[in-house]
Image 1 (cartoon, rainbow, N blue to C red):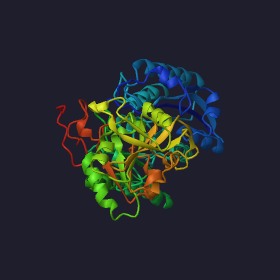
Image 2: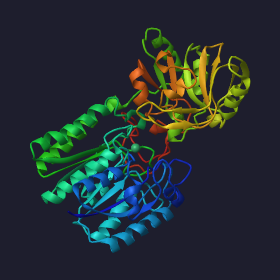
Image 3: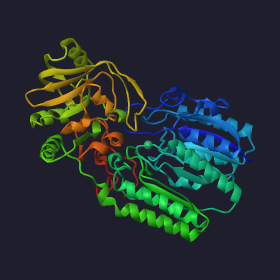
Length: 510
Ligand SMILES: [Zn+2]
């Protein structure tokens, strides 16, 4: 039995977002628990699909003594305030001084934290911890798939273990795997060699999904490199690849990988092999973004012979990534090009949804829908909208991403513009179009629709890819900028490409 200190500090920082992550944001519970400190942590994380929950479970199974430090996470936002960073550090500092000695430390980190006081939140945290516990104590941290894994993080941690799925369905599993590795390192006490590599092009989030190529094959290789060598009981101990989080204006932004093992040559060779495999797919990562009219026209053409829906991913207006879910670029293009039978959801417009309720099923309302916030100077789409079906917004998700989630989002409506044959699903609250039930709730069976517009970047793929003939990615107005070339970077390292096959950063903002 060993004494293992356990803590976490999680943030995914989009340095281009409007609002900072304050201390309150870390303290408050949301979909994840709020700030936890001391023994209450153990029960409070149980059952969550988060790394620390998996870690605590595995530590208990192995019979190790868990010494809870502090754990906190805040929703994605811009810079973590210096105040929040200082307050969190004060807890780590006090607990690490008072609760030791430890045999090892496990940390639940994201890997893409940028704070007012540092470009590398996790590197800074690890540096301060090393300052207290010294350079020899094993520190193993789990990381998000979107970590910008920096040289300092690689150097300061004994080992880093990343997620392997996006959408992330293995968060708790990754915490569990991190503890398996920690336990192995403690028991074997053999020196571990580390090989770290960075790739030289940013990968937009929309092309990082592990349901599709090339990420799917790359992560198959990650698993093979680790498992294959393990079965021979030599060489490689752990392999992690993080495709990165492009909306972070820092020098170490971008994809990276780290391999650990006892055989230096095998470790270096595995790192080279994986880096070469990612590099070889650079072109495949450079997916096509269509403007709304091109997307509508291609979808109409494809749907003539398709047996399943053509899905148009309205990726920039994803409410799960800061989008308003009310932009109308794709809706207007579908109507303009008479994409008969097409359905788009969700258009978040409380006024229109309530007006549909007042109008009643079967009746027509003449009004504009969408563009409530008016992002990118858009105007509501005016038409004679027939109210086809109303819903009260209470339903339960059935797909892999939202399965079991109990939605209560207020009035919803399916409205159809009879002139073009295009329909929209109206909603009152921002909700990512990532579950088929959102359409069924207003009488639409998604699999039977010729063209389906979805306001989601990646998460929709879990439930909609199986019913889609093909998926086209649309660059319609939205707050979640998909093409890194459009981001106003200042701090990237020289020589990195802004996207796969894209322009090289030369220090001059666009
Ligand atoms: Zn992530």
